[in-house]
Image (cartoon, rainbow, N blue to C red; front, side):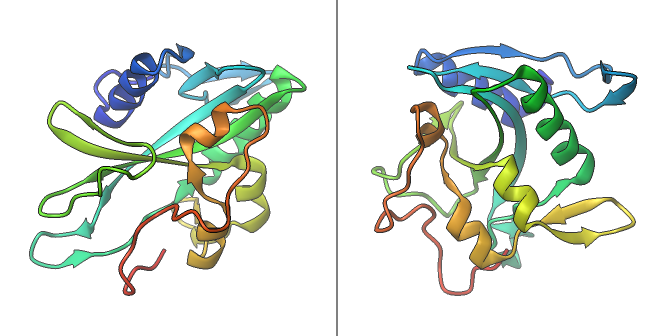
Length: 191
């Protein structure tokens, strides 16, 4: 966990308020996994029941772009190092652990989420939305975004199909109600 990263700090506060057990991981140095250095996760989360998560937090703003030209896009990009590392750590922790990418969206004014939105949360006068994707699903559907920067993303349709409120991953078997609105978005939204 990077204590200077407001998205990771907000996520830790979100977990603390909900009394969810977690261990922040010091990201100052790459960890060793076998003989190869690999990107560390941000958190190890122990939820109610048997939920065991290895988490990498991705901080994003909604909408993106500039205030003069906002982009109504739920960004979901990551790096291949993030995906590889998260998957490897979840495998190493063993059965019952899942790698999860948590997208922490900072909702910027004048936009605001309805109060009933699952996992919408205000912290230090900023509204956040917590959404997550299992890293195995992400790996299966990811597309190259930038070969030069080593980034990948999910197409809009895949993201909408795979993303869930983060709290769904705290149950033993996360499921999604098909009628549930996971992300409210105007028609011009893209990934």
